[in-house]
Image (cartoon, rainbow, N blue to C red; front, side, top):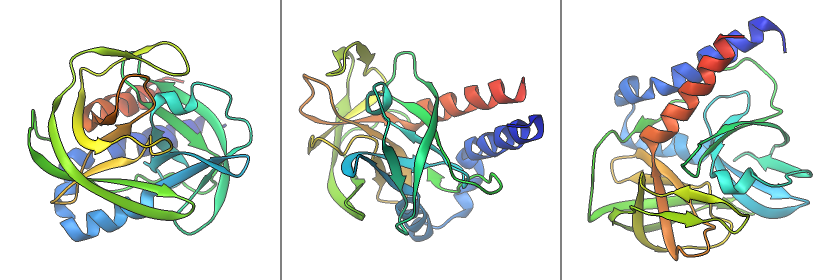
Length: 225
């Protein structure tokens, strides 16, 4: 990738982080539509594997770390319009949180996706919807945020992640929904759903503030090249 492309990608990623501020100009209805269109499905060798959310038009997306910390050869992402692309690389992932930034081989100019983002603090008994794409269709499950985790858990693929920055919900975990998104009633992106731990039976939601921090970190690395 040419130096100029690194800079363009870095700017697009940093622009996405600014959703926290200028996303307020987007209506709840429009934000929900954009989130559904940004939701991707990953399939390995043709079989559903996990979900993610596009943050730029040229293929950067976020997902749960445990979805990509193993062999992902033969994995392609599928967009809402049915187009599919191979995964190019794992850019970075959280040292403690269950989140990763990934790049798919989508061409074109980088541009940040626009969503409304939930910027609240601690929440409890708040209604939300979990969105995930499977076999091409986006599904929604409704539930409540019940509180926060405060412990580490072991991943089925090995290692541990901290759930200190995760909400816990009352939605039962289902294999393959990891990397989906949690959306508030006002159309705000609350976080990334993280399933796949050996001792977590309900969907956990990584607060989106931590996701923004990871994206900004990688943008800084690209800008420094």
